[in-house]
Image 1 (cartoon, helix red, strand yellow):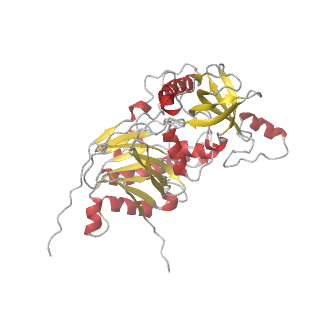
Image 2: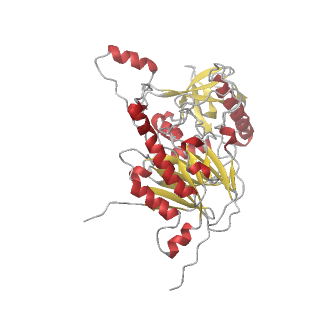
Image 3: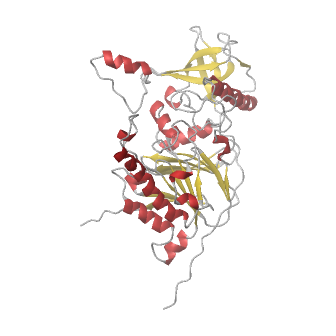
Length: 434
C-alpha cells in the first residue's frame, strides 16, 4: 500500500496593523472625553464638507449658532440621542428608595427618543426625516433642513460619510482563514471534544484526502474574543482563597494546551473579548503572553488587540470581539447584526457609542476607531448566529461582512476564501442521535 504524500501548508504574507490601537506613551492626567469627541468632529467634518458640493451645491453650510428661521441650509455636527430608558448611575440610588424593581431591558429604545445635533457653537433638537431608531450618540453627519419657529431643525435630508476608499485585491489562489469566537473554556457550555474536533480538522488530522487538502490551504486562524470563562465569584473584588487561586487559572491553562496544538501547525491571532483577562475598555490590549506559556513559545502565536486590523496577501481585515455591535443593538434598531456593521462602515466609525455607553480610553489627540480605509473583510465575534453578506459601495468597494457565532453554543466556526471572499461554515457536533 503506497504511503500518502505529506501535505504542505500554504503560506500567506501577513502584516499586523494594530499599532493605532496600542496604548503606549499615552499619559492619563485626569482628562475628560471632550477631546475624543472634538477630534472625531474635526476629522469627520472635513470629510463631509468635501462631499457637500456634489450633494447639495446650492446650499450654504452654517453652524448651529448661525441658523436662521425658515432658511434652507446644511449643518454638520455630532448626534446626541436623548433616551428615556438609558441607564443612569443615579438609578442605583433610586432603586434603594423604590419598592418597584427597576427592569433592565436588552434594548433601551422608547417612542419618545429624539436626536440633538451638536457642534462647537451649540446644539439643536432635530425633527423631520431623520429616524432616531437608526442612529446613536456619537455619529457625525451633515443635515439639510431649516430652523422652525419652535427653534428645532426640520431635517429634509441626511448625508453620511459613506464607505471609505478601498485598495485593490490581488489574491489569485485558494487560501482560507478560519474565524472562531466565544470558546468560553471553563464555562458550562464549553465542550472540549467539540473544540478538539475543530483543531484536528484545521491541523489536517481529520477527514479524507480531499478534506486534508482543503485544510492544508488554511493559512491562519483568528480567535475573536471570549476564549475563557472565569466564574464571576472569583472576580467580584473580594480576596480569593488560596485553594481557589488555581481554579482561576485552570481555564487559561486548558486553552493554552489546545492553542499549542494549533500554533504548532499554523499561525493564530488571539484577540481579547469582554470576558477575557484583559482591560475592560476599548481598545483592549493584547492578552499577556505569559498567560500562554505553551503557545507563546511558537512564533506562529500572535496576541492581538481588539479591534484587530491586519493584511493577508493584500486582503485587508478589520474586526472586533463584538462589543461595538452589541452596544449598537442596545441603543438602536436594525433588521440584523450585519446592518449594524454596515452602518459603522457608512459612518466611518467602528464604535460611535464610545465613550457615551461603551467604555474606551480617553484619548486627547486622536480617535483610533475612525475607519480611514475600507476593509475587504469586516468581522464581529460572539454573536447569536452566523450571518454574512457582501456589501458593495458606490465606488466599487466590496466588503465581506461576517457575524461569527459563539462556538461554545453553536459549534460553528467560519472559513473565508481569500481568492473570492466567499464564506462557509465549519460545524462540529458531538451529540449522537439514537
